[in-house]
Length: 306
Image 1 (cartoon, one colour):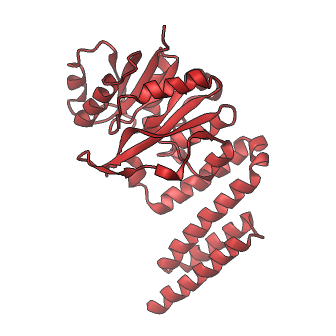
Image 2 (image 1 turned 30 degrees about the vertical axis):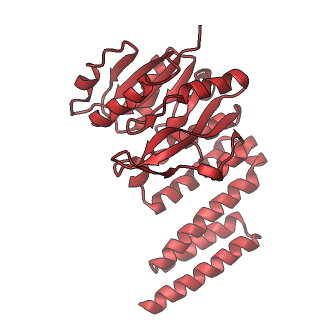
Image 3 (image 1 turned 180 degrees about the horizontal axis):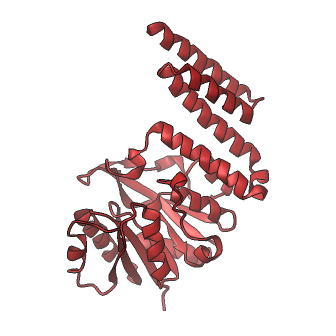
């Protein structure tokens, strides 16, 4: 018998989009799945409409409102019966061959822990904007070192062996990682399990104004990434030792980006604070010293304009 896939869809007050997401699962060419929609205390009619779906594979799990997608995902994972866990945000939609193509990878490459893919970016009306990655990424495995440089994994594209959650734990709902809980999980998983990327788009990734990712400012995003890499180094000293250069370089780059932003708004105190923090991480990087010099020129120009 083919392996069962448990599809976890967290939602909150997104009735219309959630219905579209569920319908995209029901249209899969791989039929062996269950859908667990975890309703995070919606105050609209989401649950009522979901209950009208006649397919017995669709289940609704109401929980107390928390505002943390990771809490909802974890609740679904804990009752899932499948061999695999598929993640789907309620504002995204899968293309029909998504699960079939990913299960094929697990069959051919049984050591793989997770399979992810490219996506089409679409707007609120469903109009295509562009490919999410396109030619920037090639098919193959993401190493831990690659993931430490940035997060290339689209959450709604992830298909994960369920046993991995027993080995590395569920999604963190620490507020420090808010809107990046998936990235933290990928890093923990990549220490022990290979992550395979399919370079074909297998879903529509909807860009909406109420997404947690878009709500975050550039400064918040950069500080969050710094916190994640600092946490990773403390939590996994062995992995930090193996990837020390990459981690220190990335944190330094993030501080130089913050320094540049400080220059543009003429915040002299933060400008030199970020310079100091960046220099601490990579004191002998000529490339980063050049960035600091360019940021200083930018600061001077900004001050002269006032």
